[in-house]
Length: 116
Figure (cartoon, rainbow, N blue to C red):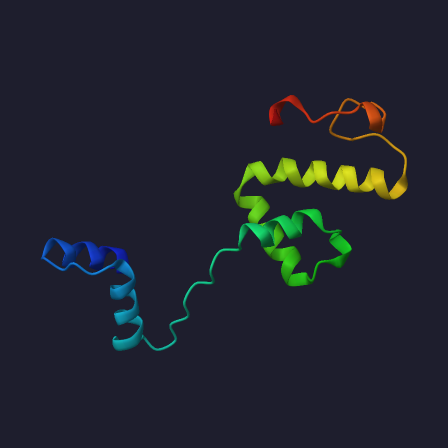
């Protein structure tokens, strides 16, 4: 049973408190199972944006693994990551074409239609 399930159940029984009150009560007063490790919170939008926009060489091993996990779960950020990497490569080498746009020079390229 989850905290949300418990909150729903006690609300049906007349409890008028907020979800956070039930959550805090459980964390404070109920004994935890031995060896219980709570799940890590999901990364924030700011963290994921940082992993996508920073140069891969500057990411720690943990950040690289978390970036990969996010990109494996969600197809939308994959396109953003590929476009960002291509753009960063073009800026750092001051030449080349965008791999994801029909081989036009940098100044003439545009984002693929699927992102419009």
